[in-house]
Length: 61
Image (cartoon, rainbow, N blue to C red; front, side, top):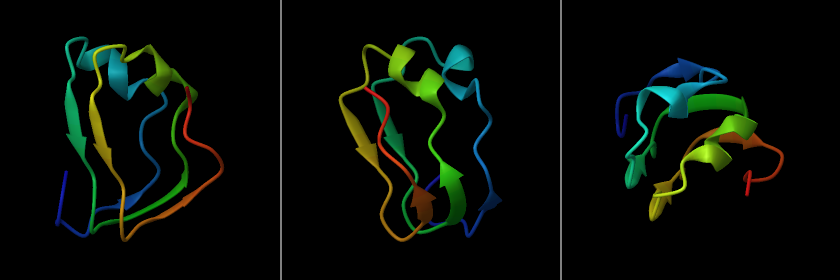
């Protein structure tokens, strides 16, 4: 998703579609709101980039 100037919230269950997700690049967009709590189910996630967005709240663990 990086460097696309996408907007809006992320889907609440985005991680369901990517069960083997290891890297998620979301930097340089216009995402806002909280990261979905379900992202904590992406247990293989090793890298998450979120710079230059408008996320709020905590990163789900």
